[in-house]
Image (cartoon, rainbow, N blue to C red; front, side):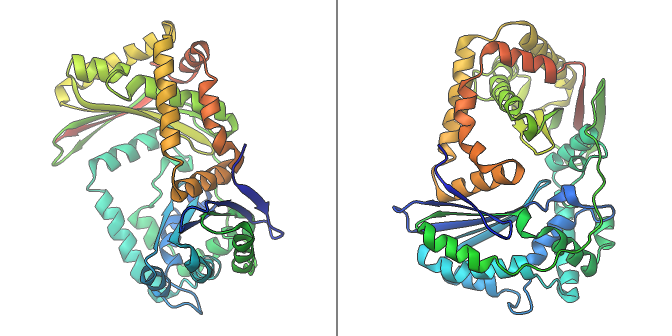
Length: 413
């Protein structure tokens, strides 16, 4: 049973509330379906840049006032942008929410996006982009997803590029903001020491006066690519001390949520913990890698399954061959009940540990409601426990082909 209450307000906004009377803290999360997938060309990077500009004030709230009021009360705020969403989070003592949430709502609904602030903040974002280009893991991952997704928005950087940001204008950003920061695209989640009546009244007052939506250019509708054969690329980076091997397969999005959950199990089976197949063989026994991990990232349109290894360059070819051999074995040899029990236990424990605090719960509910629906957030453990070895083996055959995948290799110059 879903432990929170879900309200669909008259203006189209979704509000989710869960009272935890034993905590003096309240977390308010605002999730907006205004991520990088909605950016039309050439506005790539706009969603993330707008996240920065949201905090630069409105006609009635000068820049810095929101941050000062939060910090002066001992609260914390942060924001993030991904492909499927922009996310704004406020953590404060329960009595202070009445004063602080309206300021966040004012920023989100009425961002001024002044030209002088736009130019100053653009330099900040450009420096952020340059700093990431010094990170070999970021460079490798960006190259990998571009190879996997090609022209789909998931294949480009959320940050955009320096060239793209230099072409943007305050007018274009105001258009993007008014088009997507609308109530039907917003989920407000409040969890902590506040009653349902008080929270609902506050949200109704805070998120009431939205601007008229603008007629913004639409993003291009690009179909999900298919990986046929092996998409291979090698990058040589200066100051790289250790080679990287990154392999990827794309998988269904939220329209096939059970498949994504099954791939979660396969990810843990392959490379989480010393007794997982790849860690035990490649790191513990053969000592061919310093580290190896696997991950299945759930996304709205298309999820991503990855295997990443850190190793010496002379072992790259052998390790890739052995990973492919493990995938063949996964598809052709029965998964043991012991392995299945272990993977189920790890994922269910991880879920339990990730739902202990108001911050974790607001993130969980908001994320699921943005890409699917909030109630699905609490079905995860039951779904994980419902998989058997035959279904997992079938998913491995369907989605983790040793003959069709993308691989990016990073080598020292």
